[in-house]
Length: 223
Length: 404
Picture 1 (tube, rainbow over the protein chains, first blue to last red):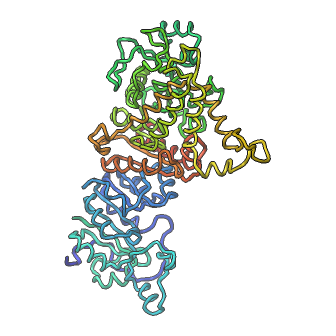
Picture 2: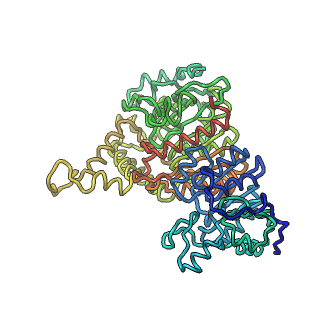
């Protein structure tokens, strides 16, 4: 699949890559995702954690939201706050859902922790009409710097685990992800890169620029 | 609107016969709580192919039914439970078995909801069961009562709910055999259950569980005082067999960890082995106590009927082997809860239901509670469990427009 700038939407033109504090409260990629979801749609959030995104989607977008979360503590918190969440595993449990069950299936900051990202991605595209995937970009300059110049496995503000304890076993860069989408025959409807301050990077920027300066990426894919 | 509106007096014939019958379980014949009686014009069509009438259902209610009749929660009891879910049992004198969960300000809040709990049919605490009088013979039914299924129990509950003037239940909640009833409700009456909370249960009884039940039944039937189920007529009760059945079952309600923590290999009232077969170990003494107190409150034939009902339970079998098909198109909001050390209804049995509900695209939550207390955990104080029930019920209430 070719990548052209016209498949992307984005915010204002790129701002300089200054390190500013990300606003406290809701994770920026969750805000971005919430803006991408049509109101009153059916949504499955895979790896929903404590339910922050589902709560946001329910209050702001009035969605019919469901979640899957691996950790028992996360599920308990979600159910106690009234969210429809099951304890389960993205690698194992998606197979039980029929085709086209949801308008959106969301995988936010989770794909890098799955055992088989390609299978998980194809399940997403099967059970949802659209898949929204956000992930940390392993091609970001700070990561290249840590590994390339310092010779150390990167530990950054967003990737806080040391190599020996990280649950993140399948990192990818923005370009890697785009290639995987192509292999799966998926169409990139929307692509957004967020810089270190959590702001959207300009859609006119070339891919190499995104891949170097985008700290996180959010993609909307469809079959 | 108070529940008393719907209270009826027991069928006069049944009450009269009961008064003249010395043998039998007093609570089975003269329940000390409201009963609903269904005469010959309203028989219960049993899965066994027989119409059962007259039919008596003993129940309790807590809280107040709202004007819309939309805040009713049916609580379903487990194998040897009763309808005293949140009030003192006249048989044991102990508080209700879910008093910690049902009540004002509790996870099932009786300031907001109207809670109904009925004794299942086939039981022995006021609803028609094998200890009840067979109107055709004037004697207790014994084994002449047709075998009762979980679906029959639910049909009878549906008759009671209708009698109480309620069309749709806000929620149906229960654990173990009660959870089976919850699942059956969502399948038999999908449009009449807004929210369902099946706890520590499964969509079918496993081979291992049937095996344990069979051991219990054989213990009852091997007791010479059982007399082919006609023990009341002989002035006897198979208490030894029933106690052994309870002892076996009780082990399955706990976990190895809980047993070890509670008893270990500690000896009972002695410093060393007695080199005999008295209860040397605390666990033996505990089990014997469990067995002996159980026979005071439960009818042996009813134990046979209850265990059989669970054994026959298999929802998928009614839908060509597909559990997902059973839940197809369901609008009910589900929340399943399992306990990590439960080996009677392990997490995987509960998760199989979750997967079927996912496959049916139903709304479902699922929580596994970490505990070493085994199957019995659903009757105990578990903060995470209570938080899950409270969270699920209140969010369902918001969706139902019940929030005040």
